[in-house]
Length: 98
Image 1 (tube, one colour):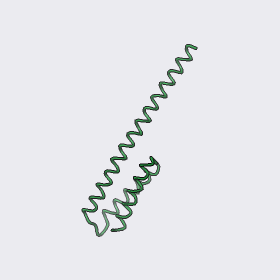
Image 2 (cartoon, rainbow, N blue to C red):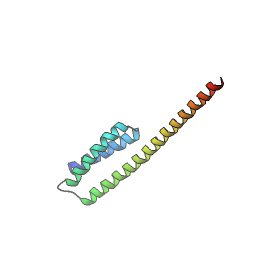
Image 3 (cartoon, helix red, strand yellow):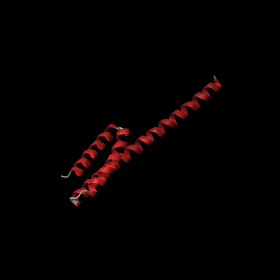
Image 4 (cartoon, rainbow, N blue to C red):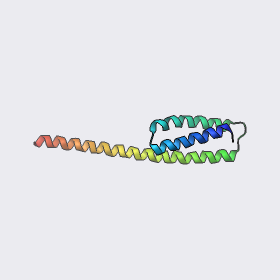
């Protein structure tokens, strides 16, 4: 296995770990690293195309999971903001009648 593929695998595994921990800062850094690893893997002199395809398909699954997680987090934040807004409105109404 080439160094480029090993680095790719390590980065993908780290990305999965960061996703499991919801470490968004690490995910951002690893996303950048992952892009470099993909470029390195695709330009490596001896590349098994089937292996590269399988690796990229596996990464696609990780990014699907990441997208799903970010959409869930985004919805949770939107729900929380809505609750805060409703609480403020209720507090204002309470102060009007107290």
